[in-house]
Length: 84
Figure 1 (cartoon, rainbow, N blue to C red):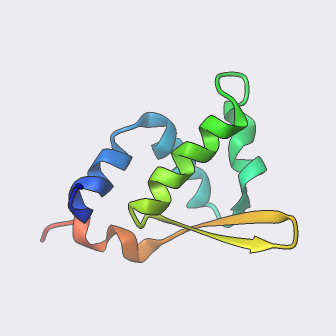
Figure 2: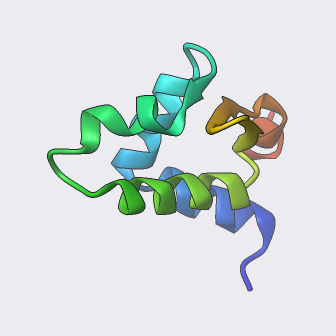
């Protein structure tokens, strides 16, 4: 099992996941809204897998609101990735 910092950098290494984080930096979004720009290149389950990697790394949080799964950027998750 990877340590938390390695898990974060591994999640950030993928350009698709970085694009998803950039979208979430604009505000909360549903999984479908995050997936929309990628659906020509990959399936919805593949997008969900990318989001799970980000969630396990602590960079994204997911909540359920009725039928919708809402995603938020977790700013606290980035704190230990920056050295001063």
